[in-house]
Length: 88
Image (tube, rainbow, N blue to C red; front, top):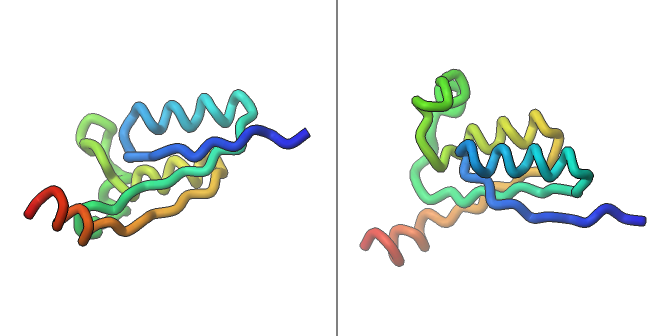
């Protein structure tokens, strides 16, 4: 029997990272997705910081967590849509 699949929005914050870990532990086939709403960041710097220094919505952290948990992870570039629909 196939494992149930979950598509999980991953911000790079503690909540979505723990949710991913718990779902993996419970046997779900977890696929992570992160929306890129800001400009690209230096992922090596972000990953090296402590959790409380990182803030929310970090693509590099979400990617790192997905790699650590060995789950697929996709980044969807929504910068233009976000800028037009939310910022402007």
